[in-house]
Length: 270
Image (cartoon, rainbow, N blue to C red; front, side, top):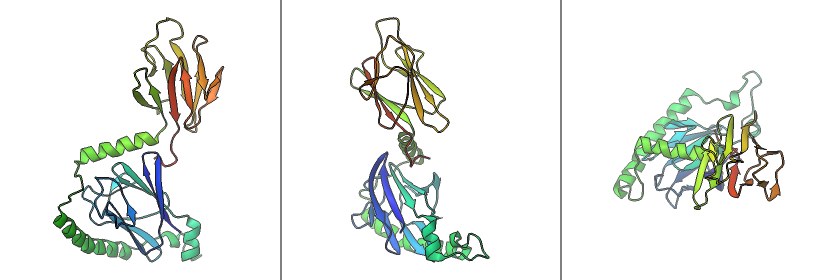
């Protein structure tokens, strides 16, 4: 059975199994999939099952509907699709094995179970236009009292910030208690107390040990931590590091008394 999973950043909020032929996503308490965001409309979009395919339709999204980073009105959903609503991410899951069981595949037409015809798309658009007009009239009467309208640039920035949180990064807890997030998209990063370090841990009185460690990006996009200075104590999970450590999600690293938290690339990241 298909389902959608709702996330805010890296936090998995809940799953909703698609058991009905029509599922509404929105901020309304009556929505099948409630979206707790002021940027989401009361009835933002819906998922409709038509002839074995699941169609996503925009029905009243004041700030638009985005799937896999692109604006759209109607989209045939496939396993792994990402519905992006500002600071929320909704992923669609439907194993192909289930599609084979429900639809069957004509041996003479490879891939037939995954196709949607032009007529289906046109029908979806026609239905969406009629229904979304009714929804928009309803929303207009309410005046979008609780929907925050944002500019396209602001919306793009919100989605960009959300995506950054899903990529591998470190969070440095500075001496004043402030947190600094640094993405790990480059090949390597020097970590220490020198101005030349990409990940700077603050000031250090002593001249030695300013280049404390190095974080290297591996071919599988994981990361390893290498100790560079014998003058700086490095601990991972409370254990002293002498050489190299393959970083794991949520590792807590202490470098010269400064706490660095590693967050690996999320499985829902692009």
